[in-house]
Length: 264
Image (cartoon, rainbow, N blue to C red; front, side):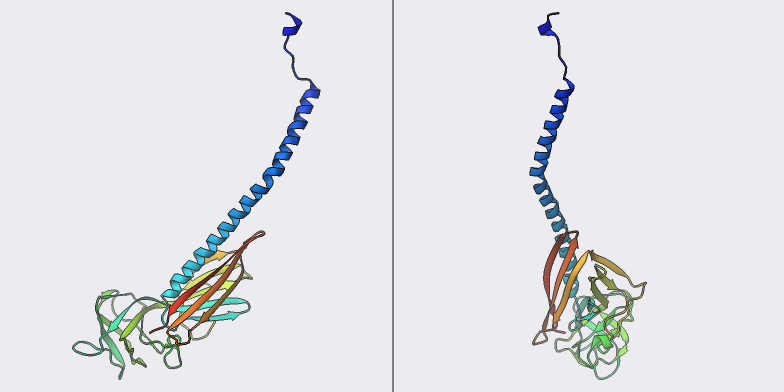
């Protein structure tokens, strides 16, 4: 075989040079790619934090919009914010005059007719009439609530534990209260938690038992503030929440406000 046609391999020096050059090129590429990759990861982390905060605030807003008029209350204890209200599941108008079973405000009445479509009720529900959130007409003190004693289902004849409600509603309205709900934001524990299924109590903030149903809405809570403005005319309130979530060095801060209908 002619010497010019003989195959030649790589020498050790050539291999070392190729490896060194590839390492240099790889290092240069890594320098250029590092910033965009880190930016993408940080953006993704912020987006996840913002989505978690938005989901929690949307849940809170949906609940607050169904609160019994004049039942929203906010308290702070040890840096922990408590937002509490009485949740409603339905409502309607009671019969105030004419033929049928009227709701009598002069004596302790045990039943009344609901006008219009049948109202869906469950065991443990309470009927609220003209809750003003003031002494003598405060649902948290039990003034404006009566326990539903009829069967579960959709009914027009509503049976209640005999009660004389303090005030009649000008619009003859009543609400069906399913029970209290609390949102507790604890930056020290890094949590935003929803509680429900506990007894109504006038004291605030509520102390929850270990068995109280709860749901963790957000973790990684760095800071939060909750305020409630009942409104000058007391016919509309505003719940404002600022929630800051964090992961590693990234944070997301969201603000949400929810209007509360306070016309009982």
